[in-house]
Image (spheres, rainbow, N blue to C red):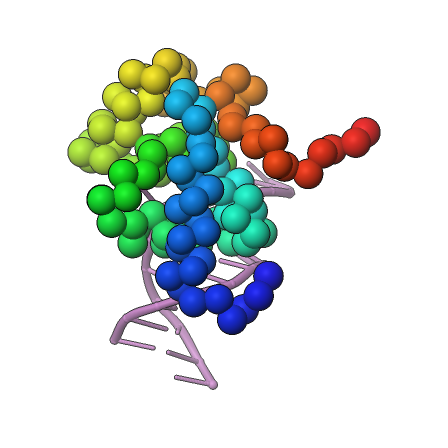
Length: 115
DNA sequence: CACCTGACCCTAC
DNA sequence: AGTAGGGCCAGGT
């Protein structure tokens, strides 16, 4: 991907992807990055989220790590807010984890996997 | 320029 | 299931 993109441009692209995650679905940091055109750069998603202004009202809680868990300390406010939001949308946690088979976001624009 | 760190990921063990 | 180490890329010091 172009290395001449500014951070704001990169963040904006990632924010746009996050906005597309539907209610009751989740996506991983790596998935979001790849969807925005930044393969193997999951940390870019984390960075974009960290810099995201609240006014954007992004569904940040729908972005979880590749293990199906929330990337926050269990006793943090962020964890509680994210988890209750997801549960309010119907996402079920089993032993602190989300089942990707059920809740993973599958964007239509994704490259078709022909087997 | 050389580390160090991160709302990460993957593969072992 | 939990931990360890390496990989990855961008920013900060």
